[in-house]
Image (cartoon, rainbow, N blue to C red; front, side, top):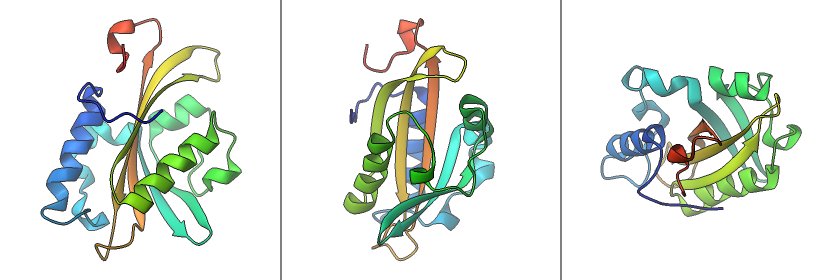
Length: 156
């Protein structure tokens, strides 16, 4: 499910605001415009991916420590299509949409964690471009909340 709602979790909104600020008057920021020291508290939830256009593939260059914990493994260096994720086609579609439209994409969903707990998850995928035309990377963030805590559900 794609959502572009003002009710994003605070971390999603903060990264999106930072991305918009970093791009200036360009369509997308460059990777060099993103300074991790500006957003250190978000880094555990951040992904940096390389976009390979033909054939379209997503390679995880950096995976935040919270994502490693949630997944039970570090998938840095692996391609999305090599991973066993919940709803991998939806995740690939989000990256493809961000790359083709050169615009941020968002998703709210639920996720069954390896420990069996179901949590709400909100995702933002924000494109980066070295030349201003082609998406070469994306910075993404996922934020999980306990499903039992309905106050944190971005859609409810």
